[in-house]
Image 1 (spheres, helix red, strand yellow):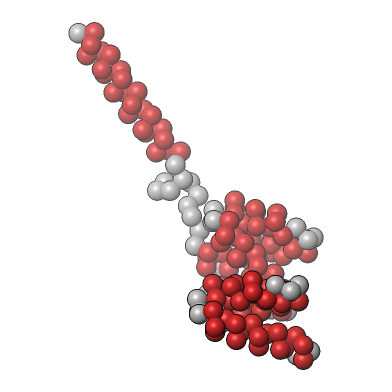
Image 2 (cartoon, helix red, strand yellow):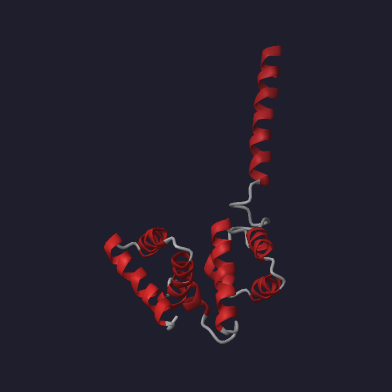
Length: 162
C-alpha cells in the first residue's frame, strides 16, 4: 500500500513539473509573446520610431537589444532590422515613403548599398582579401566574381564616383 502512495506521489510530481514547464514556455501559448516575423517589424511604426531615437543618440547596440527583447526576434534579425532602419535614415527614406516589404526583403539596392559600404571600408583599410570573402559569402558567388565586384567598387573609390 505504501509503495502505491509513493509511486502516486512521484507520478504526480512528475506531471506537475511537466505542466509547470509547459506553462512558462513562450512558444505555443496564446497568453505569451510569440516570435515576431522580421518582415512584420518593418510594419511596426512604434519599433521603427524607437530605433530611430536610439540611432540619433548613437546607441545602436541598445537599439538591437530593444528590438531583440521587444520583438522577440533573434539578435541577428534585430541587427538586420536596425541596420535597415539606419540605412533608410541615411538615404533619406522616411518610413512612410518606402514599401516595407521591398525594404526588408532581399532587395538588391538596399543590400548592395550596405554591402558596398562594408566593401569600401575594407578596401580603404587595406583588407581587400577580406572584402572579396565578404562579397562571396553575402552574394553566394564564386571568388573570381567577388574579386571583380570588389575591383569595381575599388575603381569607383579611386575615380571619386562612390
